[in-house]
Length: 137
Ligand SMILES: [Zn+2]
Image (tube, rainbow, N blue to C red; front, side):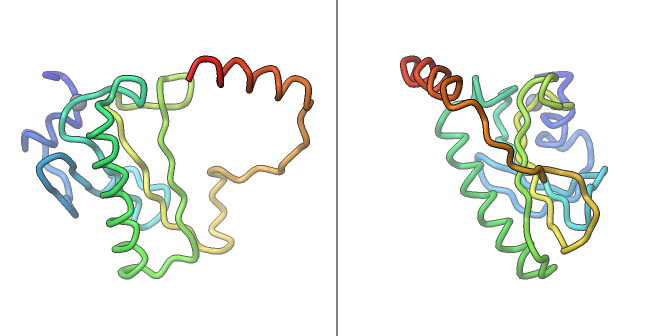
């Protein structure tokens, strides 16, 4: 897509610190890192969200996410790794080109990302919603 910042990175129109590239996938450093080593993995072919992406491109991207996660582990020795993939503005997606965030984590790094206290839900409601999703798969 012409005005997509990640497509421009793929096409070399905008510079990026690339850490891995193959025919379908590109991984590069996030310039607004949540932590040291914050890396993004994207399919080269434009797709906005998980709802539209070609399953083959998605599979390729998640395989590269694992490869880069292992490289982050080797290079930075984090205590953990948070993987985030946001779809649509309501979920916090900023760039409308599917991307997988790899965020190295260290004990007590203070990041508020994806840490929550589990609170038991209403089982009736959970079952009802589960049935709706199951019927739509
Ligand atoms: Zn794009």
